[in-house]
Length: 158
Image 1 (tube, rainbow, N blue to C red):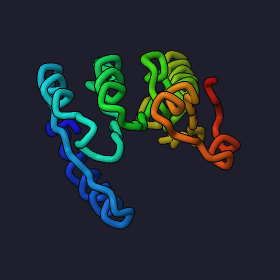
Image 2: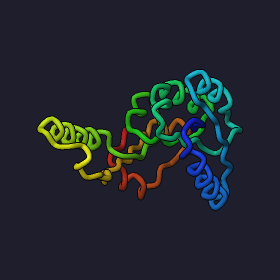
Image 3: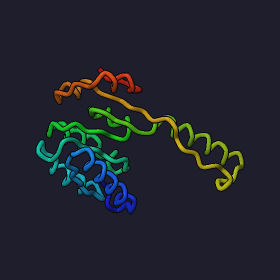
Image 4: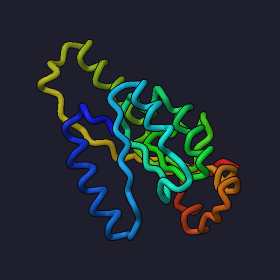
């Protein structure tokens, strides 16, 4: 969680409510810079909780290898918001398609370069989200991924 972003408080409150409903313990680790991420990662231990959920803050993308290593060392399943985390070996990711986002950005840039006013361009919401599962990581954690989840996945790494 990046404490410098005022939206995170509302996101965390929602996550707390969901965790209570699911009867799981939620541990919040705050970080506003790379050094604070390193401190927070040292708090991740097998007894720290049932799983790790990493938010989509750019700060965490920069530290993705360190985050992936910390959750593997703690033997905790973790879910990430971007497929790029799989380069560092993570269990699963679910989030907007980076490729789709970049395609939308390219279309907007093209329109602006052709003279469109940015204020005249419509706001668009992404509709493509990717679920990626790494069965190698699941096996290392002793997790049997349900077939129903494998069927829903956009990509399964074996």
